[in-house]
Image 1 (cartoon, helix red, strand yellow):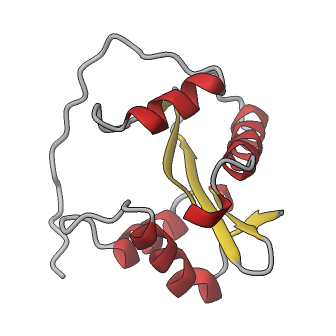
Image 2 (image 1 turned 30 degrees about the horizontal axis):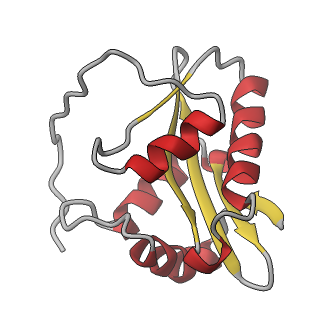
Image 3 (image 1 turned 120 degrees about the vertical axis):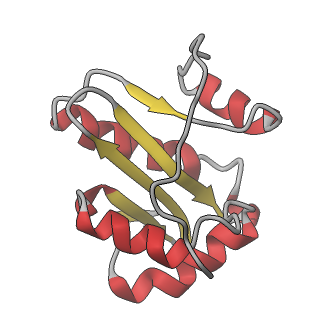
Length: 139
């Protein structure tokens, strides 16, 4: 798999992948999420290409922690090491930026994904995740 930064021509394939993987939510417009990422550290928005776009990950670093969002691998390519390869590259780029720790959020009911990250060396932090919408995405 070739890993590279997102390009505008990837948008429809990325959104279709996120929808297939169940990552989209009505309150998060994927087009707006892509646009927002392109305004902040766009080089940390990665796609994985085989014959077609099969994987994505959005990474970010604000000077204290790195964050991972939208890790997705097409269902027919899952459990073949592609998700791990995307994470290895995201971690490399974050480490290169001086990032000391990566955080991510997973729905507590998503046991398969929790186990995936634990296999990669991530541990469950004893924290409570809070959020506040500053802008509502109208679809």
